[in-house]
Image 1 (cartoon, rainbow, N blue to C red):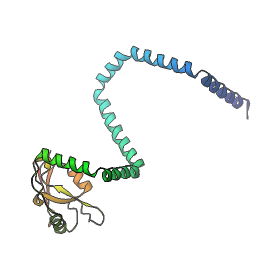
Image 2: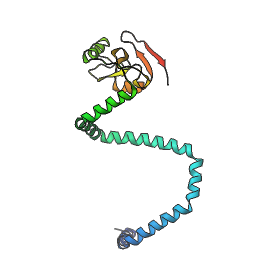
Image 3: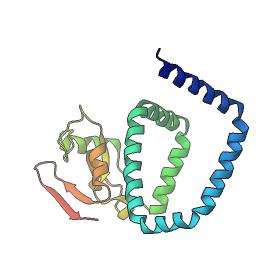
Image 4: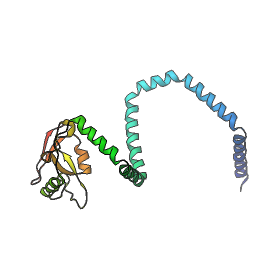
Length: 189
């Protein structure tokens, strides 16, 4: 080890000892400095926020989306496990929320599991939006006219879509035809 490296190492140790020895003093100083800095720069901070409101919002949205994707990718298994265990433990609460939602929206109509299976057969157990079969994906019930826009829960208002396509469709009114490649967009939000 050279002389410079030894001195650098000794300095690191001395700084570490100082920080450990004066921990409370440093905390107190840090708090005071933080309060003073905040009070001194309060008006300047307000001005900056007002001038750059849009830029800050865009940055926050971008950061939040990236962070959420990153967090989900890291914790995908944990999140799925937690959601499924919650659903198993709170079946009655989930059903109650669903009934309340239907009541609030005054949703009419219903369909049977047999009608749903028949409808999937008419679409060849395929998502008409992306073309994937039920071997690759799970088909979900999509309301052509969304319940939030006054649609019913009758089988005539249902079409089978995979989860991602159902989410992409959102509250748009799109009819996917089972026979041909005809997709009709009635309204766009």
